[in-house]
Length: 247
Image (cartoon, rainbow, N blue to C red; front, top):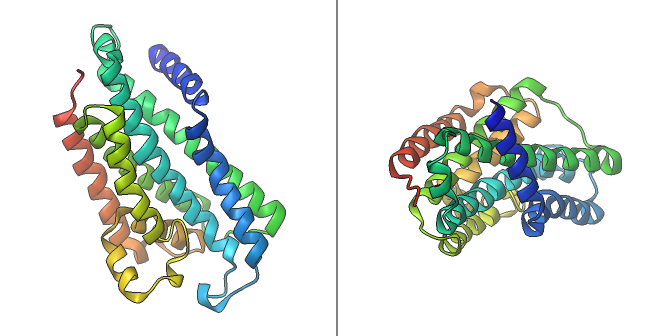
């Protein structure tokens, strides 16, 4: 436990020195919220089932942060450590491999929670954001979504040899999902054909689950999203563990 805490503290300091990661995890979603909030406000709209733009945007932007930390920051960090020989040096220390990976996941989870907290704070203070769900149920949905994308991130980090190649592949995967899943803009604004296609994207299921739990939907009405994300956790973790390379 002491080794884990020291690793987490060290990884926090390293993450804090990456301005791009901090910007897209903490500042960018808030800027989007302020931008679209200044245009549309948070008045109830029929297209969102009587909810306001901010009410549907906060859980969607939370999904954006999950995708950013899980598909961008995490795999690029892991691949970069392998490329620089950091993982090789860790391998010969008494620290267990799982401790290193848990430390990475803990840092990304903490940054995701902080990013979501900033969104909620701005939404409540500036636009009167409302929450109709159950905090415990939403927290479980949030954790499941994080675990699913972190498993996918570890898989990318296991497969790709360098930080540069990981960044390219991660961007090619993440940015189409960002625009088509509802994480960047509400899916209600997209053509029907694109909405149907977006059902195959993992981030779409994160957005759908978090939005539903945010407005008070029971878990039973989102079994498909839970099944998809649960499968992502199991399959991604097993493949990442099998394919992971230290050097």
